[in-house]
Image (tube, rainbow, N blue to C red):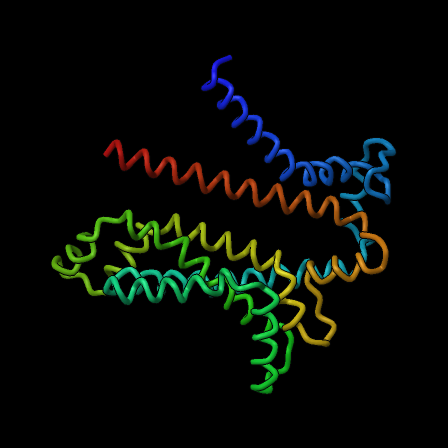
Length: 271
């Protein structure tokens, strides 16, 4: 084995070890979601009882409420942040270079800023404004930290777009809104969809910002429920099939989006 082959082998081995470290915990949860054991790691035979319990009345009502709250908050936050982020990306793309660089730097700060700092800042803001904490404050907080990610998802699609298309639409008699709706939005749609999925995932996953803005009205999301459940000394077994379903759903959505993007790119090349 020469030096080049050895370097290739070590590179592939490193990649596989890294992927194993990243995905082995998920695979363990998926495997042990198909057993009745209450304790993770104790295999008592193949069973779908936990999945049945997850979708039946035997499951804790608080977990059902937490899942529902997480989905409602995530859908609302992802929808609004996708609209705001897409429009912000279009405006940012059409700025002068110096102003664009400044705004891009400002947009990056919330992404690099630790979540706990964002959560504390929003908590103090809501308290100072006298806003009672609950659904509204959580959705507003999630919109705040999701929007910069949508901007970063849409900007690459704008760079790939032919800049003359918008001007051509205006020259042909389209209004700015018509050109935006019929020219720009179709061109950046893959980035918008990716931004929506990313915002939705970040919202469902978030804990630090949520725990500071959710208030004391008894509202729970999935992340706060898991945290409270873990503090009691163990995790509800139904969380294993729930985690498996969430992972499989996100994976399926990503595969569909990538396939659609690949087909769109192929059609453009053929055309």
